[in-house]
Length: 130
Image 1 (cartoon, one colour):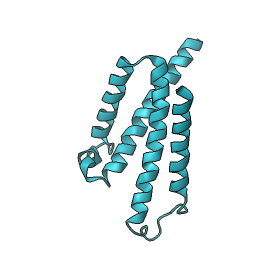
Image 2 (cartoon, one colour):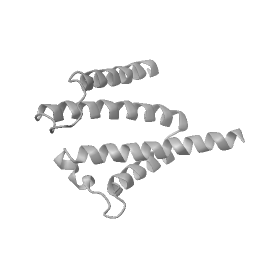
Image 3 (cartoon, one colour):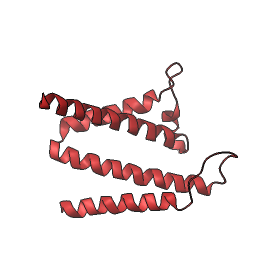
Image 4 (cartoon, helix red, strand yellow):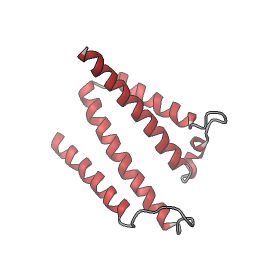
């Protein structure tokens, strides 16, 4: 029974990573011209199918090629890298001009602190593994 719960948890984590990665790529693709083909959504489902397929294929390839311990450490590093990158994109977007009227905005320091913390955690992880 415990093995089934563990397996379900791992599968859920992998699916969450695929969905998160696809949504991050989709969101970034709306602002980064080189990623524009990934900014499209399915006409009926409204989901970023191209980004989801890309991330799913990458996750499957890495899962088949990398030992579990390295995969777990790498997944943590990827999540921290994504958080740092998203905060970097938020900084870039904020510099392009003011938010639309009525849009919620976080304080200006928020993406700077987020990027700094993610990069610090990534560095600490890398130094701890060395």
